[in-house]
Each structure stands twice: as structure tokens, then as C-alpha cells.
Image (tube, rainbow, N blue to C red):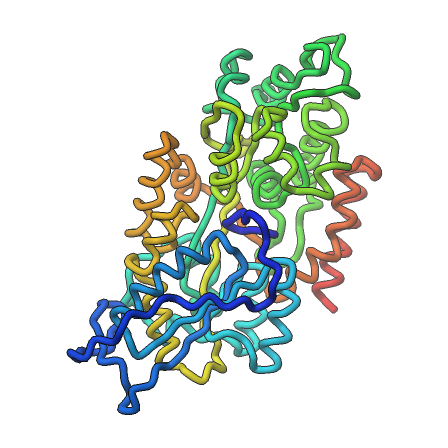
Length: 452
């Protein structure tokens, strides 16, 4: 998925742009080398030279927080200089395998759940369980579970997200909608009636009116779209279906899966309470932008859109729990980790930086600067406090992460499988193929790609 935790602003286009964290003058008073305790070192190996540890990520929103974090680290570990490499998302995953195979990869780098397993299985990653053991601050368990493979953890949890419902407060109040307990499916479906009441055409007719013009909509009710983390994976889980089975095979074409997708697709193509798939298939962020402009009443998504909404919204807005389904409420849940390069030439120093990245102190800037929920549990209050000052209660995301969650994509070949099935899945959203047929064809394409 494109951005598991952050939505960046303007993308920095220079591959491998290096941002050096500030490094104050060395303290000559000595001390041990414990990065996790924040104890200062004397900064030398006898030669007075620093070791350089490189850290790569794809998001410029997070880069300043890491600059601040590493500046603090270098104050306490003056024998190590940390350099940040910022590689844009559009280049990141193409560059990663090339740099890993050539030996040019950074010492530490970000990965998401769709990509880490391949590198863990190939021996490219430092085994965090072996190197750090249990001597670290508490980490968000959902992220730990996501990056645990063969009884070992392969990355340090950095940031995480879950799903909630952004809502236009004025529209919801005017329509008399209770957004705190929306549910789809069955006789007690409240999502469709709410979306119909909130969808308005150019003549002021709502979607539940006989005079409604679906070809001239000014405000849509809900962001039904081909978004795995925020929309169809939670819908699948909330109906007893799953994107992948326990063995990692795609399994969404089950009867429960067809029912889930049919509901979503009908919101778009039958009821016209969601933007056309011709628009959302090609621009996943268009619904966020519509919400900001007041053209979408309910926007189900994650905290990675909070800063963009807060800084650009022309509306009064709030947060509510995500939409539930027949089986209850299941949030999409994901996280990003920092992995260590097994081929690093500075292993000892890399381990110390990884220890720092796993500490609440090291992650505090991620919360204090409003980047995302930190992976270290003791640092998460800084993110809550950041938004509380702005009058936004983000506890719905914490509740969602600690509740039932939909399993995120996993396995060494899931990226290849997802790329193979996506075009057919987009056809399903367009309505150009029957849902049951399209899902089966997409599932077959995905599983075939993973088996080759």
C-alpha cells in the first residue's frame, strides 16, 4: 500500500538526498556505549574518528523528526554520525532491491509489511530478536506481530496507524446522522441510509430522493473505493472474510468476500453515494481532497491524512469510529519498521542506532511533530498531546488498533501477487465485470503470480 502511515506533501525528487543530523562537539568525559540508556561515549575508537551509519526512509514529513532524534542520539554517542537518505516513494521500491544486491543499501532503512519478508527470508536483515532480545522499551504489539516471522522480529516498530471515520460535522448535524455507530449490511444497515442522506446533487436533492440526479452530484456521502487498508480489507474482515488465508494465499473471492465487495461497489455504481471509480482508481487521494473541500461527508481513513486535513480543511470536521459490519468492527492496521542491513560494515554502531530507534526517547519527535503514532508505547502520548492542542481527539485510532483488526498483506511474494491482481480488481470497482467473476479472476491472477 502506498503510504502505510504518512501522507507526504511535495515529494522530494532527488534520489538518495542526504540529510545529515546535527552533531554537536564531542564530550571528552568518557562513559559507556549504551545508546538505549542515553549514556555519553567518548566518541572515539582510539583514532578520534566517527563511524557513519546511514538511515533511509521515503517520507519527507518524517525526515525532520528523525533529524531531531539523531541530533539527540549524537549528543550521547559522539562516536557515531547518522546520515538520513530520503528516497521518494516512487523510486524507493525500485531502488531497494538494486542497492541490496549491489551492497550499496543503507545500514538501516524503512520497510512496510508487503516487502520485509522477502528480505528477511533472503538473509538481508538483522535479526532483532537475537540482537536486542527483550531489553527494550515496550513496542506496539500489532506492529511486532506484523513483522514477526519464523519466531523472530525483523524490524524496530517506528510508526503505526489504524482506521477511523473523518466526518463533516456541519453536514452530519444537518442530516441528523449519528456517526458513532454506523454499520453496513443486514436489516440494521445504517451506512447506506446515512450516505444517501448526505449525498446531494446540484439541485439540492439527496440520494434518497426520487428527483436525485446521479450525473450531477456536488457532495458524496462516503469514500467507497479500491483502498485495501481503509476500505475493503476492513469490510472483508467485518463480514467474516479475509484478503489472504493463513498460508498467504489470496482468499477474498469467498461468498463472504463477494458479499463485501458487492456492497462497496453498489455504493458507487448503483446508489451513487460514492465518487466514481473512474476517478478514485487513478487517484487514491482524491477522496481526501474532496473531504477537505466539503465535497465528501464521510471519509474513512487513517491518521496518515490528519496533517493534510488539519492544514487544508475548509470545513468543520471530527473523528468517529470506523464503520462496523455484520461481524463487528475490524480496523485496517499497519506499521512501518526500521530494519538493519545484515551486510552493514558498521554492525556494532548500527545496532546502537537501532536500539535508539526503538526507544521512547528516540521516537518522541515523531509524536511531538505530529508525524504519526510512534511505535514505542511510552512515546505515543506525545502524538495524542499534539492533536489535543488542536482540539482533535485521536483516541479513536488507539481504540481501533487495540480492538479487532484486519490482517495486513503478508508473505515474501504478496507484492508480486497484489500487482498481478490489482488491474482486475479495479475493473470490479468500475462495474465493468460482475463482482463474483472479477474477484475470482483477480484472486487466480494473484495466486498464480505468487506461485511462479
